[in-house]
Length: 529
Image 1 (cartoon, helix red, strand yellow):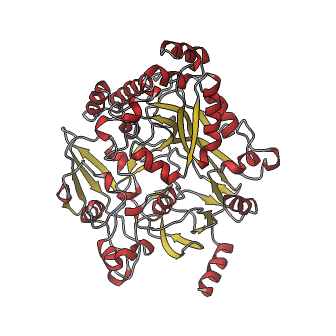
Image 2: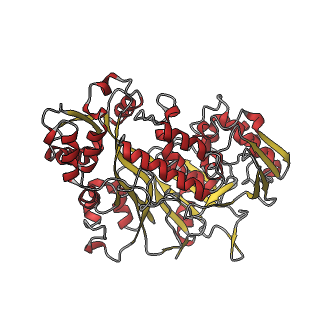
């Protein structure tokens, strides 16, 4: 091991090594368990799938060079590249990675939905296919997926790391230990992992993608450290021991950023700050399922009360003073800015309007909130400051709230069991399509079988949601999405607070590193001087 680490140190001095940190537990490099962002980061470097995303979240070919979709939108035929090879492994003939063929995708997707795998990504194909027979290898370079019903976001869904292609002989040999012996087709191949300390990926010398005649990637290696404390990691970044730093934590955001979102004077010129939309909607959810006793006995069952709450909150102040402008006021619906099809002019959300709030309270029978019972507002410790601010805003309008602070795991359980009716929540996109956000309000997705945590049930919304699956045109689906989002805003089962912004830092000698609304770590084209 000492010899290996010495080699890494020597390599770092004469090779282009990208240094990055992971501040949470990384439990697996098996893409079937890519359940958090850091696992997705690593898997995106090691593996590939049929399709991939541009920085603007458009689908483009990857291992599939082209595809056709049947007239009924239920059959997808993918034509595979013939120059994609798995990374070398001793389980291949002579230790050399073999060519990827269509049966590899049959195996990988069948494994994903197999209950014995117990993948956290089985939902990818839930209710979309009938089983393993839905995946067909027509020949070595032609792969087919048969759906039960149309699902227009499928090509985007297939960009998820869960849908990476795997070699069956390697997975079978390692079994559960494949988590720490990953073999894919990606730009970097696995070299070494001492858990909670260090992980090294090396350039895949046989990677299939090129840019301007040069084989990608341009970096020689990627080295991950595992510093749990983000402040300590930031100090390492300032010492230039890390090339990249992601997600500025609230505890020291003020040290780095001004309230207007600019780098503090003391850090100007020392590194590059990149920011952009994040597919993350921060909101407060309101349970509106009238069959629940806690709804029947709550003033929140009244739509005008819910609307009054929406008008009582100054989202611009929240973003500026609590987020250092690293957010976008949530005044244009539940689907966040950065999502393809987002149109702030077409979806009417809520701005700060105390006069309207008072008018709605009076129309509800509670002028200035008089006579209305206090409402309990649930949050986790991490977001206490935000919810206390909102509590103060509501108090000014006469809407009295009681703050309940619970551990995050306990709060999630209460939300999923519909035992609380006013809670702080967030929704981060699983895939870049508005359907992923609107599915939270489809009546057939009620908990515990789906993510409809508010118990929302609206016949018109459901009709539009179901109709959208049968529209092949993105522009037509986007139009329906906005119509659905406007229904959500009118009925107000949520209070959209803000759309998050990504904030990534990189050293001045790191070039061609881009940012995207899913915060995918893409190092294929990155150069280090």
